[in-house]
Amino acid sequence: MVSLLGGAMALNIHAQSENSFVHGQSDGYEWPTDKGVLEKLDKWQDQKFGVLFHWGLYSVPGIVESWNICSEDWIVRPMDSYYDYKKWYFGLIDEFNPTDFDPDQWARIMEEAGMKYMIFTTKHHDGFCMYDTKYTDFSIANGAFKNDPRKDVARHVWDAFRKKNFMMGCYFSKPDWHCEWFWNPEYDTPRRGANYKKERHPEWWKNYQEYTYNQLKELMTGYGSFDILWLDGGWVKGEEVGLDKLLAEVRSTTQPGLISVDRAIKGRNENYQTPERGIPAKQLDYPWESCITLSHDWGWVANPVFKTPRKVIGMLSEICAKGGSLALGVGPTPQGLIQPEVEAILKEIGAWLKVNGKAIYNTRITPNYNTGNVWFTADKNEKTLYAIYALPDGEELPATIEWEGNEPVGRMTLLKGKRAVSYTCKDGKVIVKLPKGLKNEPIALSFNVKK
Image 1 (cartoon, one colour):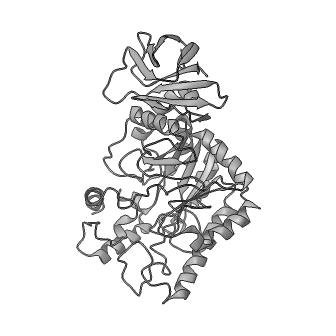
Image 2 (image 1 turned 30 degrees about the vertical axis):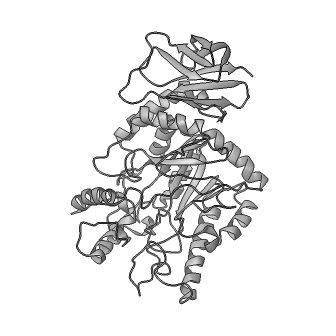
């Protein structure tokens, strides 16, 4: 039954609406005023490439995370009864037993991929907690995995990545579809928001606010230092669950300079924007991050279709040229491992970054940032530009590369092998002749530009 449900759900939820559960960009950006936050944002903008882990009940059957238990009319389920489906879904707590859980493997693979920051999902909209919270029994620490010494899963994940000096992120969903004070059992659950009118049941809403605030404080005061608090579920504002109070407290104590990402809520608590599953059309001069899945789903699914290393490198190059960072979505298996196919893709990306990373890490935007498949980034020394040729899937590396503007002076080199390349400049057009015998992969060039 699990495999049937997983396959059907993975198909149906996408067939209904690819974007019904996707956050877009906020309309505008408000710069923080806290000096510590600004400094941490600048450091985060140097990292460029991170991982966003989704791992939870949905991983057991391999289905889209959480959304199948929401009763909005764009969702189709492989069961006639919505209530039976929700009961089955919540019952997965008794099946989720990741005995092969190996956070050190996760950290090693992401380090080899060239990633510099991480975000781990502590709780998605379904309310299932991936840490040992004291505010609900609906957690991995109280299910089939409860007798394992690693049951406080999030702690072990973060510990593994701290050893590798990653910048640390905590994902948390503000909506909670298991919490009786958000989806109250006295009423049906027809939509993603609270299933009652707050003015009619102010005590329920207050209980939900306190519950959510307490969980956030629990994470921000009991699980070590963090750089990013990544809050999902933009139909509930952070200020509704005490985010202002929490940030004021933890930034002055346990989490100085903490970056707040109250997704899609324009204002003081959205310290960087998070367009989902896509890249902004134009360059942006404030902090942002595209969160994009490696496969078609955030969590693990059976028979996935993965993006190629070349595709990810191309996305990363475009994102950096436009001023952003890439959080790549990876879903560990139900057993708690990163599967071999994912490791192979990430290893190839990391090998490319190992020799071409100067064009990605620690870079900033430059006004003339794109010509065709060529994306430009600027070194923070304000002298050096990088041109990345993002070779599309299925194409061969050309003999020459052309672009307009960004006219070089002096020597131009390939980052890989430090080989000099010849070029000509005429009427504002630059033509670069590539050496013969190069590997058929994206390339990065380094040069100084005319002022």
